[in-house]
Amino acid sequence: MTLEPDLAKKVKALAHRRGLSFKETLNELIRRGLTSPARPDAQAKYTVQPHAGGFRPGIDPGKLNQLVDQLEVEGFIAEAQR
Image (spheres, helix red, strand yellow):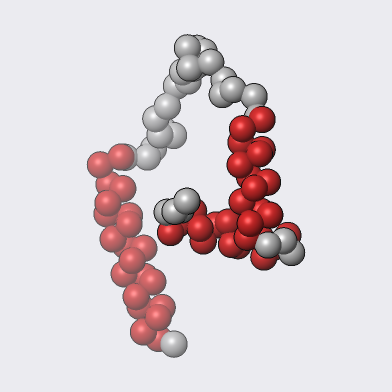
């Protein structure tokens, strides 16, 4: 059996945390995966309740980039003064 490198790394880390061998940890994970209940029904439907979005009165969304620029300049000046 060959594991993908990212999976092997995760199993090794889990084995280390649990104080188990790599083999013990891998066997436990496989057993757990094979005995776990099936995934939830893919046909399950969820209802999303929309809500009113937007900005508070007085906030001009067209000037948000200007605010970000101003904050960056202030941060630069503060760093330069240190």
